[in-house]
Image (tube, rainbow, N blue to C red):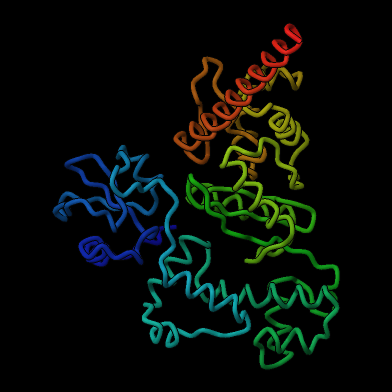
Length: 368
């Protein structure tokens, strides 16, 4: 899905260094081979020398190098108007923010629509509507009355609420005490934004938001779990947020948040082999195939590896080619190299610390 603004609008945005367009598009400069954010402080190129891309990944694929001044591969800083808008929704999920309300806040509705499509896979109004229904479901599951669920969610009538609820969940509110759903949360990381999904059983999705297969992964999650996908959070997502922060800080080597990953028997076998690869180590596709007792199934192992829906936690980044080359990675080879370097560095430091401690203990024993 191409959610970029019109070319004339993008040109105005980068000329003015408009921060509200960060994340909506990237510009590649043909004369230098470098790509930037709209807010890059470098001298602005002539329009005829500019090529536009919806994601940083697309610019990389086209052969452009990331700018060393604006660092387009680093985590995007969220525009203040987005932070304020999300805060308004969370402060009162039942509120209905119209296009007129957006304009009164100084927000162009078309810009908001494009931003939410790009970052959340849905328009702002679809996001707000889904957030209201997610809150209603939580209230029903907590035992609140239907009246409270209806009116606390911003609906003016039972019939309107029932219709919206049934369209989303496939059942009426009165039959939804045991209704589960996939809650989606968006997390920041040193490698860019991540989208995470979780049911009541555990994490079922973790992907970089610019991955080409993201829409396919959403469709697969809906098909496998037969549940609606709504913005929100639960205890597993909150735990994941903390564990990811510790992982990227180099202080966590093993995730403990529960996972749920249905698939074919062969796919699950491959994913379980991935989970068995030690932190800081790698395995080749052929080694995985041999471990499964199917040494000729190297390509099938590669396909199953590529269909992994839970990046980092099910560490498909630890699989490399037989000759040691990185091979492929859905999140991009730069990210794969970063993850491997991070884990290798932490492991080496731990090894040095352990060796130092052993040497000290040995010396104490020898001279004691």
